[in-house]
Image (cartoon, rainbow, N blue to C red; front, side):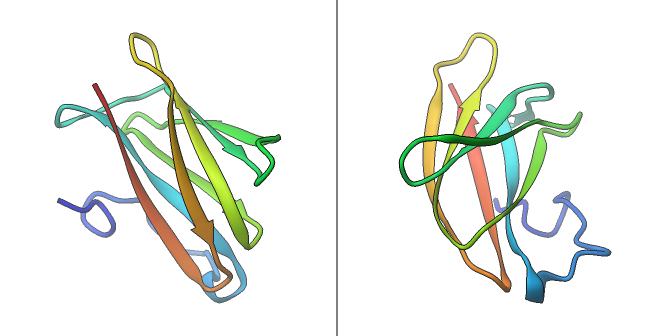
Length: 99
Protein backbone atom coordinates (compact mmCIF):
# COMPACT_ATOMS: atom_id res chain seq x y z
CA UNK A 1 0.00 0.00 0.00
CA UNK A 2 1.36 3.41 -0.94
CA UNK A 3 0.59 6.37 1.31
CA UNK A 4 1.17 8.89 -1.50
CA UNK A 5 -2.37 10.19 -1.57
CA UNK A 6 -4.67 8.47 0.90
CA UNK A 7 -3.48 9.38 4.38
CA UNK A 8 -0.33 11.05 3.02
CA UNK A 9 0.84 14.60 3.51
CA UNK A 10 -1.15 17.31 1.77
CA UNK A 11 0.67 19.28 -0.91
CA UNK A 12 -1.73 22.23 -0.59
CA UNK A 13 0.27 25.43 -0.80
CA UNK A 14 3.39 23.68 -2.16
CA UNK A 15 4.47 24.73 -5.65
CA UNK A 16 5.81 21.32 -6.66
CA UNK A 17 6.97 22.73 -10.01
CA UNK A 18 9.58 24.81 -8.14
CA UNK A 19 10.50 22.37 -5.37
CA UNK A 20 12.25 19.02 -4.94
CA UNK A 21 10.12 17.36 -2.26
CA UNK A 22 11.11 14.25 -0.32
CA UNK A 23 8.40 13.02 2.01
CA UNK A 24 7.06 9.85 3.47
CA UNK A 25 6.03 7.87 6.48
CA UNK A 26 7.78 5.78 9.12
CA UNK A 27 5.93 2.64 10.20
CA UNK A 28 6.43 -0.39 12.43
CA UNK A 29 4.20 -3.22 11.33
CA UNK A 30 1.14 -1.39 10.05
CA UNK A 31 1.34 1.36 12.69
CA UNK A 32 2.79 4.86 12.18
CA UNK A 33 5.82 5.77 14.31
CA UNK A 34 5.48 9.26 15.83
CA UNK A 35 8.50 11.12 17.21
CA UNK A 36 11.08 9.18 15.20
CA UNK A 37 13.75 11.36 13.59
CA UNK A 38 14.55 11.46 9.90
CA UNK A 39 17.82 13.04 8.84
CA UNK A 40 18.71 14.29 5.40
CA UNK A 41 22.34 13.56 4.52
CA UNK A 42 24.04 14.87 1.39
CA UNK A 43 25.93 12.78 -1.14
CA UNK A 44 29.07 12.81 1.05
CA UNK A 45 27.13 11.75 4.16
CA UNK A 46 27.15 15.22 5.73
CA UNK A 47 24.17 16.15 7.92
CA UNK A 48 21.90 18.69 6.20
CA UNK A 49 18.62 18.65 8.12
CA UNK A 50 16.51 16.67 10.58
CA UNK A 51 12.79 16.53 11.28
CA UNK A 52 10.70 14.55 13.77
CA UNK A 53 7.88 12.45 12.39
CA UNK A 54 4.36 13.68 13.06
CA UNK A 55 1.75 11.88 15.13
CA UNK A 56 0.88 10.01 11.92
CA UNK A 57 4.53 9.06 11.25
CA UNK A 58 4.95 11.50 8.35
CA UNK A 59 7.91 13.70 7.44
CA UNK A 60 8.82 16.13 4.62
CA UNK A 61 11.97 17.80 3.32
CA UNK A 62 12.43 20.42 0.64
CA UNK A 63 15.75 19.29 -0.80
CA UNK A 64 17.99 20.47 -3.56
CA UNK A 65 18.11 18.32 -6.66
CA UNK A 66 20.44 15.34 -6.43
CA UNK A 67 21.19 12.22 -4.44
CA UNK A 68 20.37 12.15 -0.73
CA UNK A 69 20.30 9.64 2.11
CA UNK A 70 17.40 9.53 4.56
CA UNK A 71 18.57 8.23 7.94
CA UNK A 72 15.76 7.17 10.25
CA UNK A 73 16.35 6.93 14.00
CA UNK A 74 13.67 5.58 16.33
CA UNK A 75 13.60 4.05 19.80
CA UNK A 76 13.96 0.26 19.90
CA UNK A 77 14.98 0.13 16.23
CA UNK A 78 18.15 -0.06 14.22
CA UNK A 79 19.12 2.98 12.16
CA UNK A 80 17.80 2.69 8.60
CA UNK A 81 19.35 4.48 5.62
CA UNK A 82 17.48 4.90 2.32
CA UNK A 83 18.92 6.53 -0.80
CA UNK A 84 16.67 8.90 -2.73
CA UNK A 85 17.07 11.14 -5.74
CA UNK A 86 15.29 14.48 -5.55
CA UNK A 87 14.33 16.44 -8.66
CA UNK A 88 12.74 19.85 -9.07
CA UNK A 89 9.10 19.35 -10.05
CA UNK A 90 8.67 15.95 -8.42
CA UNK A 91 7.69 14.45 -5.09
CA UNK A 92 9.63 11.43 -3.84
CA UNK A 93 7.42 9.30 -1.59
CA UNK A 94 9.31 7.07 0.85
CA UNK A 95 8.04 4.45 3.26
CA UNK A 96 10.46 3.46 6.02
CA UNK A 97 9.46 0.18 7.67
CA UNK A 98 11.03 -0.44 11.07
CA UNK A 99 11.41 -3.94 12.45
